[in-house]
Amino acid sequence: MKKFKLLILILPFFLILVNCNSAKKTAMEAKPVENPVSYKTDIAPMMTVSCTPCHFPPQGRKEPLDNYEHVKSNIKEVIKLVKLPVTDPDFMPFKSKKPALTSEQIATLEKWQQQGMPE
Image 1 (cartoon, rainbow, N blue to C red):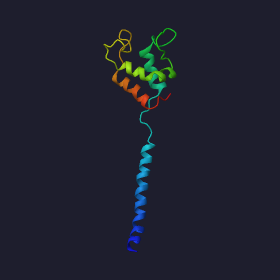
Image 2 (image 1 turned 90 degrees about the horizontal axis):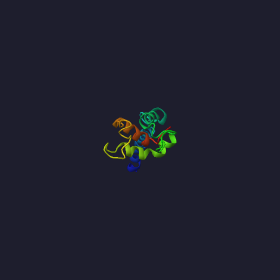
Image 3 (image 1 turned 45 degrees about the horizontal axis):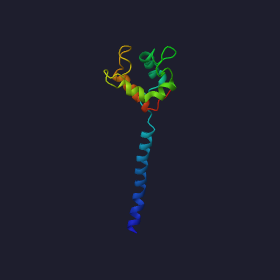
């Protein structure tokens, strides 16, 4: 009988403790992404500066990167090519056309990809 009374006394504290932890977890999971990256404000301007005219039709004859869908479907390849050594023949942007992307710009591309590529 003493064990039963003790259990009745301890049970409410246990329930409170469990609910506190799950509330903290839910709050942490629902935390919004800090500094979200968007195509319109962050990626499109970068593409325009670094990828024209080669990847912007009608003058560009390379894989188009002139709109959201094109960049979204090619983001893995874009990141791969901008991270290559400048001496690599596949490095982009082509060295005689435009300056290389900065490490901050590359990080922005990667962050955009990680965030699900919001428009």
